Amino acid sequence: MTATYTWDVFCSLDGFGSYGEDGNWGGYWGKQGPEFLARRLAQYSEEQRLVLGANTFREFVGFMGTAAEVSEADDPVNSRMTHMPTTVVSTSLHGPLDWPDATLVSGDAVEVVARLKEESAVPLRSHGSLSMNWSLMAAGLVDRVQVSVFPVITGETGADPILAGAADFDLELLESHTLDGRIQELVYRPTLHA
Image (tube, rainbow, N blue to C red; front, side):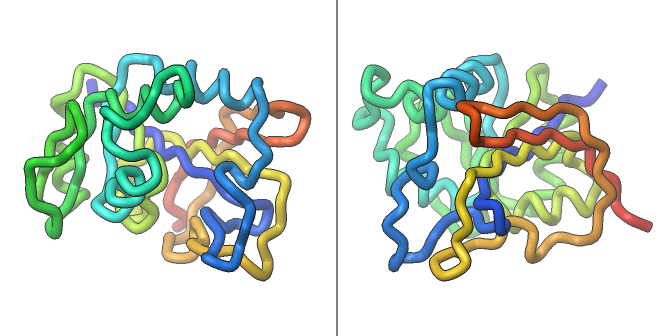
C-alpha cells in the first residue's frame, strides 16, 4: 500500500498564495483565528513526513528561522513543522540543512515522491512548493489537495498564483470546513482532466 500524499496550500479568494513586497497583509493575511490555528496544529501533529521543494524550504527557513529560533510557546504550528521529519527535494541546495530532521534528496521530484509513497510507513504532506506539486499532480501522485482560502482579494498585491502552472484537473470534494467563521478549508481528490 502506498502512502497518501496531501498537497496543502493557502490562497486568497483570487487564487494567490502570497502577496508582493508592496502588500502589508502579514502572515495568513492577518485573518487567522483560534479555530484555524488549532486545526493546523492538529493536522501537523499527526505522524507524517513533510515534503518540500527547494524554494519553499528556503522561504520557510527565511521566515520561520532555524529550529532553534522557533519557540513552541510563541508559534506551536511553525515549531511543529520545523521538527517534523522532512524531505527536501532539490537540485540546487547543498547540505547539511539547518533543519533538525531534514533529508536533502537531489533528483526529479516525480521520481523522488513516487519512491517515498512506496517506502513511507506514514502519510506525506507538502505545504506550498507550487511548481513541484503541479508536476506531482500531473503525474498522478497527489491524492488530496487541501486548499485554505482566506477572506481577502489581493488583486493589486497578489503573488504566486497557486494553480497558474498546473494542468487541467477535475476535483472531487472530500471535505469542507469553515474556520473562525471566515476561512474555508477545502479538501479535494484531483484527477487529471482528459
